[in-house]
Length: 219
Image 1 (cartoon, rainbow, N blue to C red):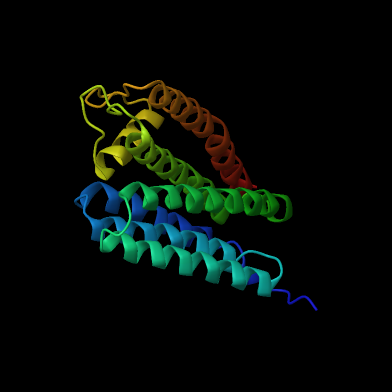
Image 2 (tube, rainbow, N blue to C red):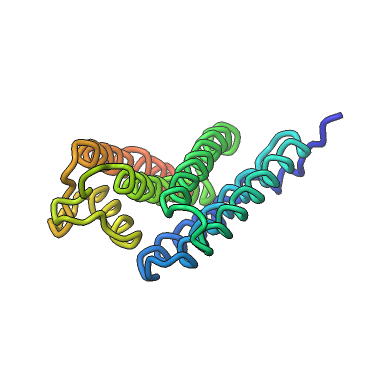
């Protein structure tokens, strides 16, 4: 027997957007310490839990998926706090969690656009995708810095978590301050992907959604 969630329980993309924005600011302003990394991991997990628990589908499956993700993330967060694992392990899990959140968000957003059209929630979800993509890039920078033999940045450092998030979003927006530049081929490839996706997404998806939202309100 399938338990159908109430229609109003789905598509809480405004909450995901707020959590994503909080995560971005948190990663930038907090020092790169075990406790901060653990809290950041739990913030990342919370976004996936919101997406999973408010999605449409089998309630039992959604509940078990959310519980599994929560337990694994909590265990890794505790290990990070006590320095029981390397920091890049938490970042690797962050890549998986953010990737899963992005996947679920995009699928749910496409479904909502087909059934409800362009709404404020749809725009919120699309903006959340942009922020999550930036966080994904920053986590990949962290992992790349730890597993690579050379310094990730040409400035001779792998950088801190704050610098990774800063680098991800300045690259996505093509601001290009030049204070942090990738030194490795992996880093340069990642930067090119971030620039292309970041700019194309803003001028196509976001612009189209905002334009259709305005048109819908006028009509």
